Amino acid sequence: MTDRETEILHIIEKDPTISQNQIADMLGITRSSVSVYINNMTKKGILRGRGYIIARERYPLVVGAVNMDIIATPQPQDLAEPLCAGRIFEDSRVAVRYGGCAKNVSELLVRLGCAPRMIAAIAGDIFGRSILQECRDQGIVTDSSLVLEGASTSLIVEVQDPGGQQVLTGLRSRNIAQQITPGFLRQQAPVLSQAAQIVIEDKLSAETLSYLTAAWGDRPLFLHATSYSRTGVYIGLLDRFHTVLIPPEIACIAAGAERTDGSDLGAVRELARQLMQMGARRVVLPLPDGTLCLADGAGCTVYAPAVGRTAGYTFYRDAVMAGLVYSCDRGLDERETLRFLAACREAALQSGGGESFCLPLVKQQLEKGGGRFFQTAWA
Image (cartoon, rainbow, N blue to C red; front, side, top):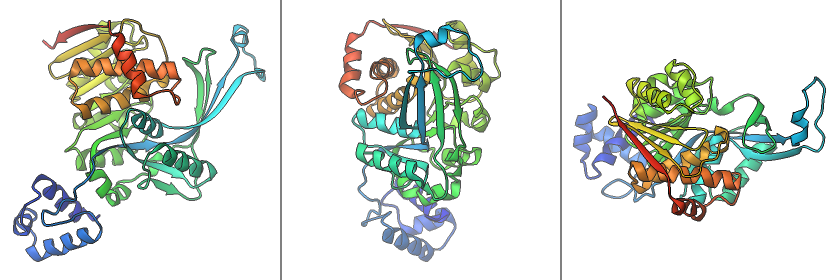
């Protein structure tokens, strides 16, 4: 769609029975010009009928990165000895899978019973085509993704601890998600306009983040903060997001605060307060032991599950984001949301993020209950 068509669509969404004369007055153009725009939008399938707006489905939309994950897990005895250059760990477990936050969150939303769409930058190589096919097989609609012929799929190589709960080291190749530009997204306006919620990953460029949050901020936007080096692209946009999901280690960088590992709840509350003062409307900080901190304008609510397992953020972050979108869509209150997020985290750890993650498993975790809430109002 053109910029003008996007403006008209936003106006009609708010009032489907508005007249062309009223639209013309609001935009400062002639009624005949509005008629031409509306005719073109009807031909494109964006509008339909006398009331203009299509009877549309609403869905969560995820915008971000996909990649190939190569995960290596050495044997416990290998790490008991000093590391030396050139050493190769024999009999290690090595797995190759399709990943990336956009793909992972979309897949987990499917497993929660949602019907997500995904806009991602996908290379036109053999790996990219395989990713697209797997997404289709899983029920993720990718028709609006950017396929880059001649590009190579981003690769992530991780070495995990023997228990598979911590990342010891990792390498990443070029991030092609930054090829998603505002110009490309304007062409996807019909898809964006029908999204009930939009998850935005921090791998996108600052320009694209600014466009998405300015043009589509009339619906819940969720920021998925996953990278230590990307805080600068969204630091001035925190007030545009419905919820920011960010671990304490990255939040410290964003806030310019002294680093905390999340073990000191007082420090985490103070960190949440700083993010609110920087403009954030709602922040969720997941801690390594399973505790969750949710802060908004009124104060900070902490939920500590009855049984929490310490794990690296990488292993459950996408499940928590999927849980946030699900909770928003179902209208859960703050405490219900925190319980649901904790259940998603535990279900993800139990299933290894694999095919056994599903809504019944999450509900099974919910039924265990037993967690505690701690609430603090801002002074």
